Length: 125
Image (tube, rainbow, N blue to C red; front, side, top):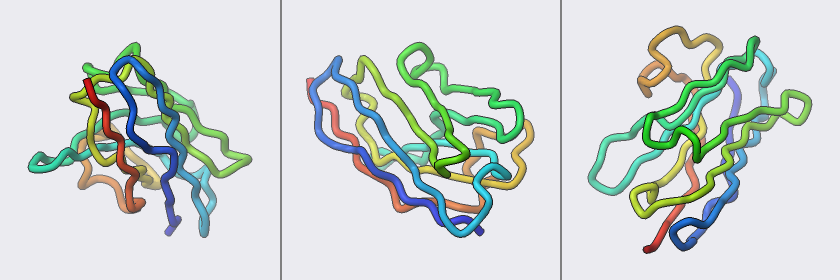
């Protein structure tokens, strides 16, 4: 299984931007569907965005559409999440997830086999 490591989190003000990265090792990155999830204290882990391994098709949580952009660079074994116009409600620990194949249930965290340790994003008003 691939090992994942996130980076790029931090503390910012509302309307600022952050770019998260996830580096994969120990597997063939291009063979994995990839996603970002997040979890705020006391809340369940929730889907943020996903990108297919073959088509590059993307899907987003409604509340981040138009503000967040997921992308991948297979040659660099890297997944990215560009977050613009951040809001306090985006505050959470952000996790990178991977699975060899994710069908229609891409928003369900139980579908993913591989997870990183997460990176904290804090947005203040």
